[in-house]
Length: 234
Image (tube, rainbow, N blue to C red; front, side, top):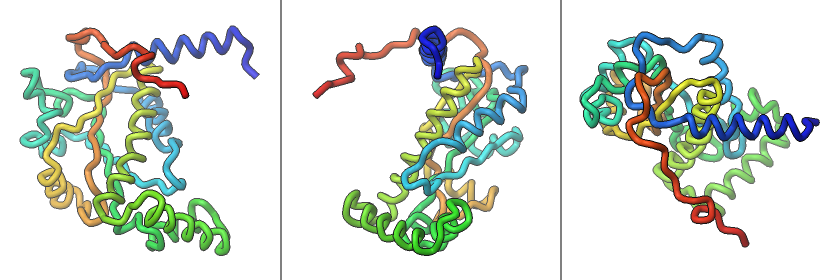
C-alpha cells in the first residue's frame, strides 16, 4: 500500500499532467514519439473499460502522409484551416481514428459478440447465454438501444473512454494530444471504405486523435469553471 508521501506525489503528477495537456493544433514535425512510449499510450486504450467488456471500438492509426492527405479536404478540425497551419494531419507524430462498432456486430446475439464472449472473455456456454440475455435486456429495455444509431452512439461512448485514458497517459509522459470531431462523417466513411476497406455497415468514424510534441506554447491559457460549479453533492 502506498504511504501518504507516495500518494501525494501521484496526486501531484496527475494534476500536473492535466494542467499540461491542451488541444494541440500544431505539432513539431521534427519530433517523433518513441515506439515504446506510444505502445504505452496504446495499452492505456486497450486496457480501458467498455460497457459489458464488449470492446465496441477499433483504432485505425494513419501514419503515411499520403493516407492522411486523403482526409485533408473534409477533416477541417485537423487541417489547420482555423489556424493557418498544416494542422494535426500534417504535423502529428501519430494520427488515429476511432471506429465505433454498429449494430451489425453490437446487437445482442450477434456473431461478433458470441465469438467475443467465447474466445476473449473465455465464458463457458451457460455463462455466455446468461450474458446475452442480460445484454439484450439492457439494450432493448433499460437503455432503449433499439436502433442502429443508438447502438452506434453507445459504441462511440466506449471509444471516448479509451480516448481520454490515452490522452492522459500521453500527458503523464510529456506527450501532447488533440481530440478531433471536426470532420464530415459521410465523406470520412466513403474514404475509409474506398481506401482502407472498412465497411460502413460495421464501423462508424467516432473521433480522430493526434499525438506528438507541441510546436509552441498554447495560444490561450487553460480555463475551466470552478469545481463547485461542475460538481454537486447530494
